[in-house]
Image (cartoon, rainbow, N blue to C red):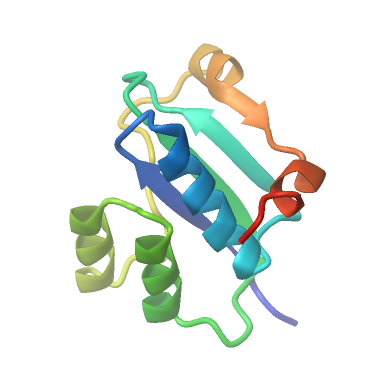
Length: 115
């Protein structure tokens, strides 16, 4: 049985073009079944989170996909260097912050984006 892992993209901008580019990359790699977009706690960016099968996807491949999606290069390098599978998005989480930040993204809306 394949393992399921979380893949994230930490966008340090509120530029909608960067968010759309990230969603296009996630769609290209079929990460659209369970996808969430959150505004960062600072309000200066977005966190895109998807769940995917690890079948045929090494940590190195997942990080390459994150880079293509526009993820923070330093964070990707640190995750690769430390061989961390889990990507941390927040320094502090509270139920209130998660509730206020979480917006479920429709698969239909993502699939409608032209690649």
